Image 1 (spheres, one colour):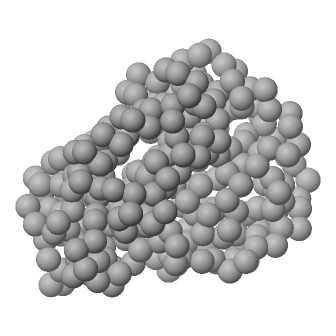
Image 2: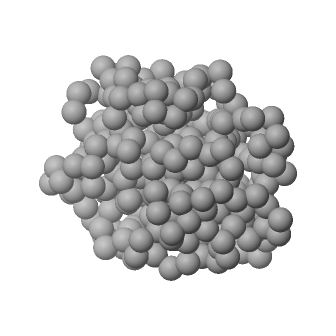
Amino acid sequence: MSDIGSRGYVVADALVSTSWVAQHLDDPDVRIVESNEDPLLYASGHIPGAVEVDWTRDLNDPLCRDYLQRDRFEALASRIGITRDTTIVFYGDKSNWWATYALWVFHLFGHTNCRIMDGGRLKWQKEGRPLTKEVPSYPATEYRSPERDDKEFRAFRDQVLQHLHSQGKMIDVRSPEEYNGTRLHMEAYPNEGALRGGHIPGAKNVPWAKAVDPETGEFLPADKLRSLYEEMSGLNPQDDVIVYCRIGERSSHTWFALHYLLGYPSVRNYDGSWTEWGNLVGAPIER
């Protein structure tokens, strides 16, 4: 695929190439972060110098169905040795949806100096680049964060209900089978608790994986992304858009594509997604 800078993205430096990462492995102003669903994957081999941020252990509250609060985010950031000025480059498995999920949570705390390594582990390994089992150690920092701000990038169920009444645009990024209700979960994954199948009324189905090259895991050029989201789904950059999946991880990938690569100013991720909506008493569902 063409170089990132020539693909026509609105914010081209939201992505970095595997070559860029390889050139910055020893850069003290850059921290490489791996985030996966499989907790054993990082230990099996990771990019040299990369730290792990686990989506459940590190990013979620252990009791409340919510993300970590400011004190725990500060502790996480201090532990991995970053400051407010550190450029964080996320990568992971599953074509990077866990990487975009971690980036999205960091954005809730105002750390927007973040990038995604285009292609993730898939591309890094296909290129034969080195992996290591050595876990790096960085000096702890005194990271100070603002309170988590959910307003700009996060949607809650009441806001989704309001969105329905205002004729706002919604994208369901799950598989067609999940969207039409014939499956309650991703193929080869366990059901995570939804009692009903289907989709939120009015939501258009644009599976997250359509935004990437299946061979390399890289994002498609901007013109193809616009065709995907605008011509096929009726979106335009002026829309107020909510994206969702099952718990917000796949939809964070679409949020990233719309907000950064296509420049949509108003895109929110409904992280409650189908595990919440599919259990809400009286919530409207279409099939």
